[in-house]
Length: 196
Ligand SMILES: Cc1cc2nc3c(=O)[nH]c(=O)nc-3n(C[C@H](O)[C@H](O)[C@H](O)COP(=O)(O)O)c2cc1C
Image (cartoon, rainbow, N blue to C red):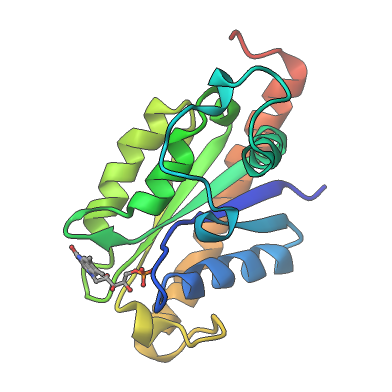
């Protein structure tokens, strides 16, 4: 049975490049039979964090936040597409994630980082690992590091050149790892109610 996987991406730049990696991941996960959906923070358009979702009385959260909360609660796994600004996380994706907490719990998460350079967003990749753990997700050890993003994927999200070849070769193991943990967590959630 298909797993429901949200692919989250958070650049707000007009000339953003990471959308190529997000599109690639959604497409390839769908080709594997997964029910994958892109969550584009810019399209969702949450404001800078004021109140978290749980701080609204039931039924009073802004519609975009409510809709996203339901999608997060209903997902089996998450893939975070993480770029890097000045060795830090992209604020758009961090802002989106911070609106929620318990909604993320008890599911696996995978990190796919990228950048314009050969370090492929490795620093943001590391930062997200701790943050996603804090938010109750189990971060799988397989990861993707894509760089330079412009040389690895074309505008339609198709792999190009040596970097694209490396991405195509590493993706199956990444997806296998995520699928295994997704199935394991799903089975355990249905066998036993999470403790909190
Ligand atoms: C404000 C800013 C800071 C950046 N800092 C880094 C950095 O620390 N490390 C890096 O590898 N690339 C850095 N870059 C280059 C980005 O990796 C590249 O622009 C990438 O495409 C950004 O993701 P996006 O296009 O999805 O917004 C930076 C880019 C911007 C706009």
